[in-house]
Length: 628
Image (cartoon, rainbow, N blue to C red; front, side):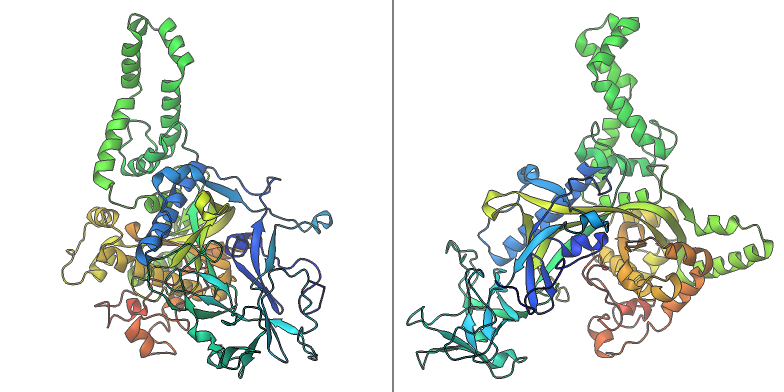
């Protein structure tokens, strides 16, 4: 395509901060600049080692693969797609990639992180409506209409068509049924009103079609093979915008110290949980030492040379056979005892989502010494000025009482990992109950080759962990005697830890935490100096906690400042105004959340603005009493 001010700009097409890479620079996503829409075609991988290393890649890979398998297979089942499902056996086909990061140095000014191409390649003359769908842009000149005598120029068609049954998204096109070579005109009576758009053949008077009347045949355009068993339906038009046609699915997780090898990846989550529960106190007295001690024992147990040394230096081993030596060493190192504990943990928690709880424990520094976590209780106790200390103690007591808090913890430095695991094609109707999105993994090549990846960006940041009083929370959400009122904190913790993700109590707990998190983030700018776009969140329903962290490219220490100087004020300001919304009474009666009151940008919200309800703070519709 020749250079033209309407189609080309100078310099890099689009730049994003590294922290936004998983949300924008992923194969298949749209980038809209000036008057053109582009689609990311290829992302280059990091070969210079500019990304922070991930400490525990096997755990990250395991967790991401499980999410991809669930999302993709659920889509196939729900829409009757004829694609092959992902199975556990496909785990070897999944890999982690890091995006190529660029610096601001002059020598890097010509570098790029990836490539994109114009999408969709559908154009219409702004004067006569001549419609063109070129297979290649090499010979297409947008400055001159191809219709003889017309002095107009082309613009990109601003919509694509989307099938809600098979998830197909494609450029807008149409051809005459009498002759595919006939010229087509796209008539737009009102440019911004799609129902006035019509295709018509320039040669055949009766050949015309409303763009909203076109149907999807559920066949792959390249191979004409069927893609779905669902009935044909009309295409839905989608306006071109970033995040409006293809939505990235990004997962943020905590990076923990390396565990594998020698600990088997299937045992990692249970080892971490057992450490928290004190099941491995016989391995090491301090929880932070369990992982390293257990790894050393397993390495020692599997080291052939170590056995040779033991046999030569220990008479008790020397007189035993090879198999007996292995059994004795396993007993001496308590390997069998460890395995027995793991079997018991699997029996007790096999149906529970424990990875999220382990992330929380990692946040609190349970598994390593390099997580600088400071509780508000410790902060108040550390004050040397008696007057300030007394004031803070009073404020802290009121804060815990008024907001049902167990503890607030500031983590000055934590390593998180944001990973894009795929994209959602077309409309993401998260507001519809039981909606299943058209999730598509990031395929390395055509789908039938079966290889896919996740785009990983590890980063260091600060954050504030807010833990609610678990007994009080359970009592607040208790409806219809689903669970008894609990006063014992240990019993409450046990109930929450054992919740299944599909249980009603788990969903209610998640809604409470998520709504609180959004309410605090929306009031963040005044107190932290960080606007909502610069923050992120993690939810821990099985521990009644949520974590707000900075997603800014530069860590300004804003969360640390509010923790030390304005924490009570931040909470109080958050609670004010939650009882009303611009769109009430519709908002509070229907869902209790909308763009005007609780929604956040997609790259901030961990659940695509699902599981939100302002009635958490009102207590009249879906909750029997207000929680804040």
